[in-house]
Length: 82
Image (cartoon, rainbow, N blue to C red; front, side, top):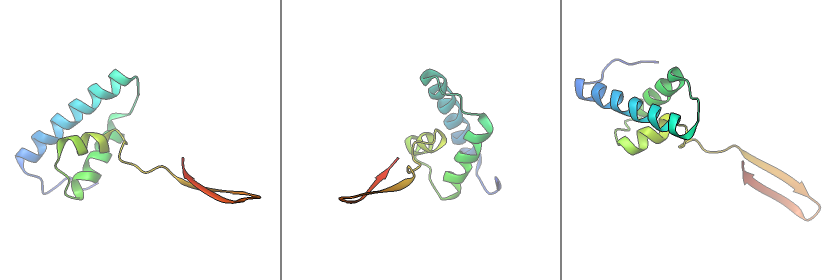
């Protein structure tokens, strides 16, 4: 995980995002490890994301697409994200 190249303002934003994400996680009863939250944050930030709401969603894993699954029935094939 590369964390170089961020400004002081970026680091302040990231700290606020982690604080907000931790509070949200605890309020919802989720137990997301801080290291996982941090990796998700830097993954999103590395792609250029700076919007606080989108970063919190990324940190909490809410931006991840569900796995695509296909089911075959006698009437045809049905695909659904699960």
